[in-house]
Length: 535
Image (cartoon, rainbow, N blue to C red):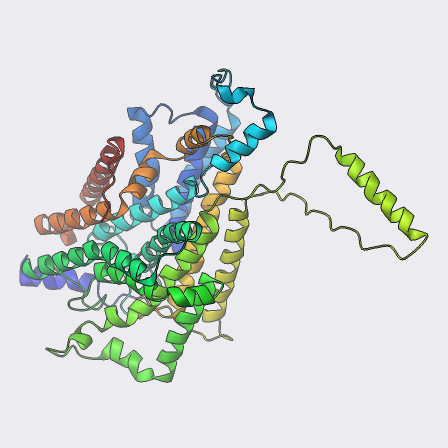
């Protein structure tokens, strides 16, 4: 890479101001629209069962190419692409569903069949895993990984709009949201371990911190490898993203140890979301009390030999990313556990009508002697979406959205979003966006796969969850960090081999489709051979 071309590459991603909030929402709605079409095809037509080559190709086109085309050739009109995905969904709904023979197969008899029905139900309920794999979370994380992997290469081509690239100091862009979403999704994953610790007993502070450092060590190694490769190969870099030596892997590596250090505080504050808001709010007040810090981060020169000034973006933005990580953990603790049965089974030996009659008789008998006692509160009616997961997401989406409007409103703090500083407005925006995305994916699951968690045994539930999950999304979610590393390596290889700034749109799309197709093929191959690469 010649010095002149390197300067052109750096200039193409520098001094950008981002785009509009609603445009980003319209582009990212392609992922839920594709998920809805996939779900309808699977539920009514069993299109992806068995998972044949045409099914795999359709899965790839819907989830990978749909997101890729939304951020490139359809970037100016994402509503058109959403419409192209909704129309087949309506057509599939109008067709009569395909009947399967699964329900007609008689269940195999076992010794458990001789037990009373009530005993068997109680035994089955106790055997169900308290933290089931939920397809809508898999789909959300898979979509986030796909849009991240496509964007890190697509941004090097002119077909990718400059308004979607990372902003210089202030503004909203698709890639700004991608960075925050990656951290938010990592927090959701970390919540699973937190819930397991609550069930089995919290380990000591020393054990937790050692475990956090063990998880962080591979990320530190990846960070140093990236640093060495970028400097050694003289690869084009945008230093105002994180700094001269800092990179995103170092930020990810520091999150687990920092969270382990905050565990005593997490026990005192009842809500992870509240802690995230307080933490980012206090950091924003620090910026306001010392305005010179803002000028230092954005305008200061990078003094030779001064490590802090050379990497100030990565250092000062870490608190904001930590707040996003904690907020993701808060959402995870609310949506990962199995929802409690809203209507426990009543004893069969007593008619519910008899209970009402007894209650009414007791009230009438008391009325002649004393004031009637307060009636027993009635149970709330069963909502349309009985999942507490759904209502938890409704609550937090509403809270973060209101805070997002308040933070940027003229009569509020009137803050401008800054990924470079990871300020309060950026933290709230990322949390509101990801909560809303999860809510949409959860709503699709609740509507299409209503009986997903009503199975009486683990094997049946596992099969239903597998049938309700896209293989492509599951594969990207399963080895997400390894695929992200592979995406970075392929991006570097392509940029070293092709002068991407001078590639036409047709050639660029061919390269990008081949690139995301390679990632998808590797992901499916690893999943098929039951390989999970833990980094």
